[in-house]
Length: 327
Ligand code: UFG
Image (tube, rainbow, N blue to C red; front, top):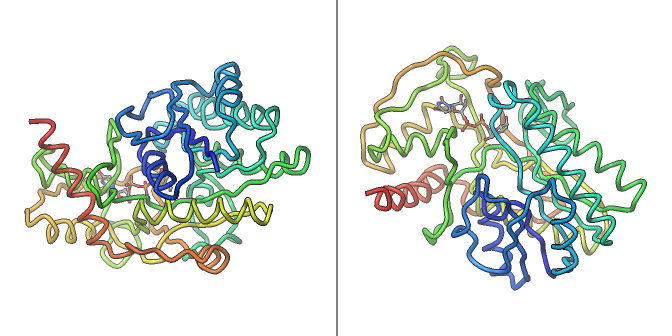
């Protein structure tokens, strides 16, 4: 198949492009390079374009005639979304509608959407399965949930078929060392801890030690980027075969606290990491853990890199590469 990967120059998108090419699909990446990097796109065609431009989208669909679209291009910072809801609703929602409308016009009917655990809000129970009520608490989560709702209506009206993949905490890096997490600014826990380990940052701050968890720090479900992308590939194949829209929560089903991640990073890197205790970060639920049994059963998905030290080890290889580059 020929797959259009929107946001293919970003962290998750670039790993997806690599995996699609390895699976012998053709790829065209569509990215405005606002957060991604051209040299993270390891192959296939590349179109520099913005989702808000219907003309740029039309030109891409006409020139490349994709069979399916995977959409990774969104803003992802919860805190920023509270300060700048306009930015999040415009890019994550309105621009996604622009993309969907272009797909319909060009008769492309298969869509894989990057959604998020943030659509669930404060969990009513963990692990969180697909039946958990949705109650996003910030514009980031709301923008993703709005797309999910629009997709159901687009299926009904236009026959679009889609899979929504709700990520828990995507982490790690391609084991080849060729790709990794390159957010600027970086806000995610594991890359920040590793920057503290490598000396690129003086310390890591723990956002709250007074949560209702075993050690008082927040618990998250970290999923290796390669496992995450593998689920996309399975979802795409199944979508094209069965023509059935669906939703999957993607995580390992194992929660690790912020402190456990720091401890694991010290073991992996052999460095003592300087830790400062800070206040809680607004909007952080105490525990977010996925129940991914539906993805395991329906897609035959089995995470291969579920071990936390493996995830951190791959991210560490990437951090050392970034450190060498910075020198
Ligand atoms: N944390 C710290 N210090 C830091 C950074 C993070 O203690 O410097 C803590 C956070 O408070 C949280 C945990 O580490 O408890 C993980 O934080 P991340 O920022 O790495 O990830 P989140 O769980 O906040 O966010 C992830 C995705 C978001 C998505 C969210 C869904 O990265 O895109 O899950 O709730 F919105």
